Length: 79
Image 1 (cartoon, rainbow, N blue to C red):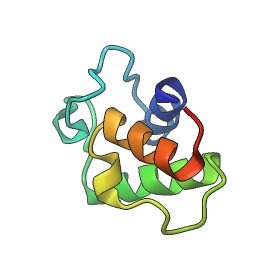
Image 2 (cartoon, rainbow, N blue to C red; image 1 turned 60 degrees about the vertical axis):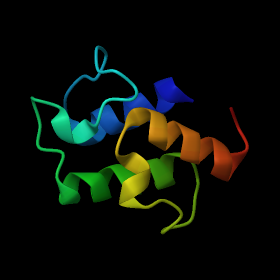
Image 3 (tube, rainbow, N blue to C red; image 1 turned 120 degrees about the vertical axis):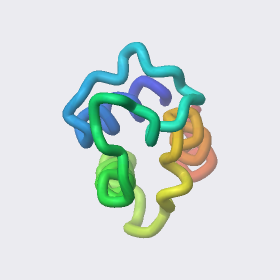
Image 4 (tube, rainbow, N blue to C red; image 1 turned 135 degrees about the vertical axis):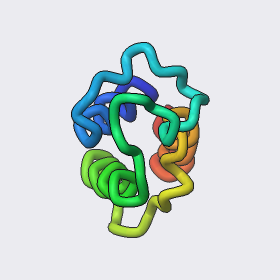
């Protein structure tokens, strides 16, 4: 799950997150602006990639890679 979330968020950011810790705030990522618009982009891409309805995720759900993966497990039931 975490690898899939990482790949989707990387696509939104346009930067690799390979060395980025799962629990580190994405807002602290140095090479990209992870502002409110980027958070919405990440939410939209994750909802689409995981086949969720629009609005299933909130921007708070994508504060970290770990938070996004945890929430997606809750929503999809897939570890």
